[in-house]
Length: 288
Ligand code: ADP
Image (tube, rainbow, N blue to C red; front, side, top):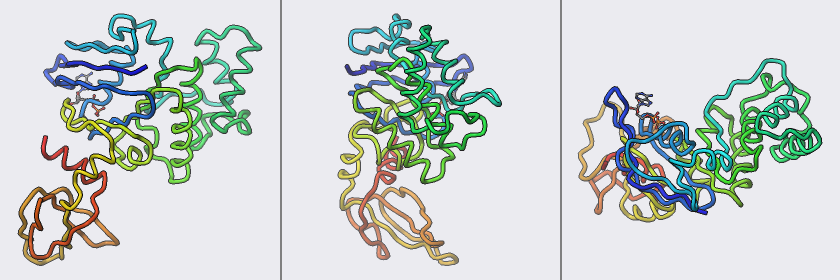
């Protein structure tokens, strides 16, 4: 079951256009929604989650009209917001049990089974008696995933889940997201380019409410092959002259290098380099 977004626009009352004619077709699996702050990612996700309405456009998931059949969508939806509140002192097991009750799992036996299954799935079973408020960032996010999966939703929306996690926690959470995306449609919104590269076979780059790129991350990178060039920027020397589009200034072991997109070598000091998704991301943003 895929998700089809057509001509979606949203202007807030203060005049900000957050979504400006979005068209996207999203297949099952992990889909990356990449964009800088203010690009419209949260607005799009809140709209998909039926928490707010657009001004124009349609969204369909299979045969469900998302904008008019909110209840049908919510039955199939799990949402992991950026920050979710937890009650101090309440254990993971108790809290998940409480959320399951709120989601309508009224049979105690069934509920207990579901809670234990989810705690196992996110690798928190051993920690189930500990207070969620005392969890590390990564454990808390894995708890968030468990909470979002209570009713076994087909559509899972995850908002910047790896922000602030250390590399080990991040890779653990990404492995979990990868696992649960096997039989679901998971939309991962993030500004962390490497998360999208690691996880998503398909993605969109959003910028100023518009889709700046849609496709496979690998295709975005392949399109830049033999067109990305690098030159070291030495402090104190005169600015480097170049032709083409400046993608970024990066630091490498304390040295600054500039990366430029151009069909041919942009200048004397430049060498060709392998492009990566960050180059493709900056190119999409700068050309928009
Ligand atoms: P992102 O999640 O990519 O950071 P948002 O969807 O939060 O983007 O925001 C897109 C634009 O809409 C931004 O300019 C933001 O300031 C504005 N915006 C978001 N929510 C509101 C709101 N409730 N009222 C007015 N403007 C908003």
